[in-house]
Every structure is written in structure tokens, then in C-alpha cells.
Image (cartoon, rainbow, N blue to C red; front, side, top):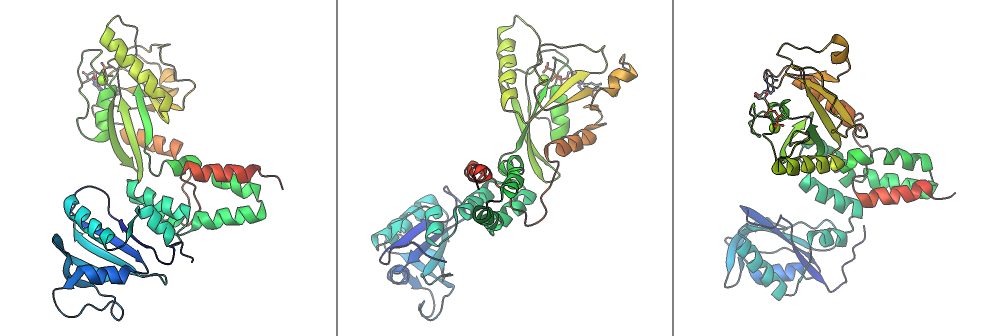
Length: 361
Ligand SMILES: Nc1nc2c(ncn2[C@@H]2O[C@H](COP(=O)(O)OP(=O)(O)OP(=O)(O)O)[C@@H](O)[C@H]2O)c(=O)[nH]1
Ligand SMILES: [Mg+2]
């Protein structure tokens, strides 16, 4: 592992997320790290001798403004690296950071610090993605990439010009991009078919207003949940119909625009009234499932008409809702990578692989 820090430069960075928290971690890395710690830290008990004992030490860090901290040397390369665990109020973190800078360290982002320690771009991206992913299942895939699965695969492809291997990696791109961004599912259909009721049944709480009045929902209402360890955001909006009501028309245009960015639409119809062909719903080009709701009520639908649907549900009783969720997962996450599989998860990585897949030779 190489380090990119100029010999005389020592860096300081806050490793924890910006904002107030219980605790924060500041890292000092570079040739003068020990010297800087020595000038600002006084242990509550015993000696402070990083050369011979990496700690942890408990003591006071700072001059006029100071904090009780735990300090330890955490070097993994030949470059001295020290972590200070202080209280997390943003004013205290800023004050300590300023004092470390005054003592000679240069403030950098935690990404720059990782780069200095010789970590690859993929590893830095994975570390960043891990702070944003929402489920432990997604985190496990990202940890594999932080530990080098994707770096090793890209290196091998680059040296062997193995186009098929590049294409295989690219087949995971949609899955990979959704490790940090939930899949977007839009509930669409005519007014009063039970879109808001179904959103509430899926989320397990009363997120959207439900009423027998057609045209109740106007704004797009979002709710996030995880299914089988993958993250999804469901969105419900205005029922689509032709109307003179200006506010309802604005709501319909919102939901039509939201369809453009949705990963999948659920086209909902009401089984308790005769089947209507709603030409206003432009779903045919879109990945979608057709749903018949209100299956708890009597229905004028023929057997054939019901069989053409992907799923019958009752938002009121919950009948069929779990089966619907399983269908959604099977459609959007048809393959799950085995442990250790390289998976690209940023647009930068996808671009690199696309170039490798098309490189002559
Ligand atoms: N029996 C029965 N009634 C339902 C079911 N789902 C919804 N409803 C009723 O149907 C009516 C309309 O439900 P909503 O969820 O507000 O329908 P919507 O599609 O969101 O309607 P808009 O927002 O107006 O477009 C309400 O009275 C609900 O209680 C169901 O599965 N079974
Ligand atoms: Mg509604």
C-alpha cells in the first residue's frame, strides 16, 4: 500500500457525519500526528507516550476550549494515524479541529484522507454508499465491494480484455444503483379504486387520506419500506380521469410526471364495479403489474378478466397484499448476488465497465 501524503504534510479530518451527535471522531494522519497530539492532549492519569503505547488514553484535548476525549494511535501503515473520540456538539468539533489546524495539520474531507491512506476509488465510494444504504442486505453487498471484490474484477478485465466478464458485471448495474436508492413504485389508476388504501396496507400505517369521495388525493404521497431486505419507496397520487377541476388536473399531471422516473407502476382497478378501459393511463411502455382491488366485495368481473390481472388484493382485509409484494420483489430483484460477487454501484464504475466492454482487442 502506498501513501500519497507529502512527507512533511499532516492531515486532519472529521470521520463522523456533519451535524450534532453524541460523539464525533477526528483523525490526524501524517508525520507530525504524534507531535500535534502531544501538544494538545493531557491524560487524566499516567503518562502519554504514543511512541511506546498506542493507547487508548482518556484525557483533556485542546487549549482554552477543550473536551474530555478518548485518544488512540490507530496506524495501519508506516504513517502515524491518531483518532480522537470527542463529544459530538458541532461547536466543540469545530473548535478542536481549528486547534489541530493551528498546530500544523491541513483539514481535508474523510474521502481525501482515505485516498491518502492508499484506498481505491471503489473502496471510498463503497464506504460512502454504506452510510446511505438502508438495509443490512444492501450493506453486505457494499461491504464486499469495500473489501475489494469489484476492484479485483475490474483489474482482471482490464488486463485480459474479457468483454464477456465486463458485460456480466454490467448486468448487475440496475441492482447495484439501487443499493443506495430505493426502487420507486407508483400506484396509478382511476379515482376511488383504493390506491391510497393499498399504499397504507403496504406500509402498515395510515400514510395517505382515504375517503369514498373520488378525487381525494392530489399531491404525490411517498412512503418507504423494505421487502425481503431491499428498499422500496411507494408513491400514491391523484386518480387519473378527465376533469375540469384545476387542482385535480394539477394532481394528475404530477402523477403522470412521476411515472417517468418510476421503476415500476402498479395499475389498480376496482373489482367491485364493471371493468373500465382507462385510456388516460399511459402505462403500456412501463414495467407494470395490473392489480384488481376490493377483492373482498362481490364482483361483476368475468373469470377471464380476473385471470388477466397479475394480482387480486383487498386493501381492506390485506388479502393478496403479501403475494403482491413478493411479485414486485421477484420482478425488480430477479437475481441476488452470491456473497463476494463484484457488483458495480455508481455511474462512474458503470462507465468504466462500459468502456472495457467495448474496448477493441
Ligand atoms: N371494500 C373495500 N373498500 C375499499 C378497499 N380499498 C379501498 N376501499 C374504499 O374505497 C374508497 C376509496 O378508497 P381510496 O383509497 O381513497 O381510493 P383512491 O384510489 O386513493 O381514491 P382517489 O384518491 O380519490 O383517487 C374508500 O371508501 C375506501 O374505504 C377494499 O379493498 N375493499
Ligand atoms: Mg387516494
